[in-house]
Image (tube, rainbow, N blue to C red):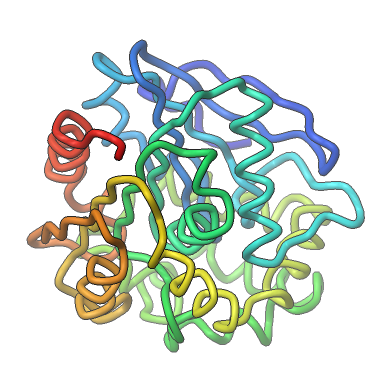
Length: 288
C-alpha cells in the first residue's frame, strides 16, 4: 500500500466503471488535481501539497500507472486518451468545478491529453517536466516497453528495483532526480509491481499502449486550449527544456518558468520552488 504521507490527507476511494481510484484529499479553497507518472503514486506530490494545502483543496490520486494498489477492471483503456478520459471521469465523480490540473512525467502527458480532448473539464493547466511530442517514452527507460509487456517480465524488473544501487541507475530512477528519493517513498513507488500480480497486469497493458502518436496528437490539440497554463520545467535532458519551451509556444495563454537545480521530478528535488510557482500562477491566472 502507498505510504501514508500525512501531508496528503486521508485516503478515500471513488468508484468508476473502470475500477476504484484511491486518492488523498486535504485543504480548503480552489481545487487542484495532481497527476503523477509511471511507477509512482500520490506520494510524488507530498512536498508540494504540504505548501499549498493552506490555500487550496489538494486532490492527489494514485492513478493506475504502476504505483497503484487498486487494479483496474478488464477492458480499461490504458492509451493516453483513455487515461485522459479516466481523469475527466474522476474529476466529474468528485464534483470538481474547473479544477487546476497539475502533471509531472507521464502524468504531464496525460494532462496534455485532457487539455486537448476535454478542455471544458478543467480551469487551468500546469505542466512540469513531462513526456511530450516524440519523447514518449524517453530513451533511457524505453526498456520498460520490452520488459514491461508481460507480467513475468515486470516481476523480474520489479524485484531488481528493491536495490538502492539499481534505483539510482540511469535506466531506473537515476536521471529523474539529482538527490536520492527516500527509501520509504521508493518502496511505495515500486512495491505494488512486486507485490500484486493484478498491478503488473495493469502496467503491462499500459506499456503496450504507449505511443508517441498520442503525445503528438495531444500537442496539436493544445493550440486551441482556452485556459491559462504554466509550463514549469527544469534544465535536464530526460524531458528537454526545449520541449517545455515548445509547449509554452503552442498554448495561447501560457507562461514558461524554469526550476533550477532539479531533475525531471521537480517535486522531489525542488518542492518549495515548484509549489511557489504553482501558487503564483494560480493567484494571477484568470480564465478567459
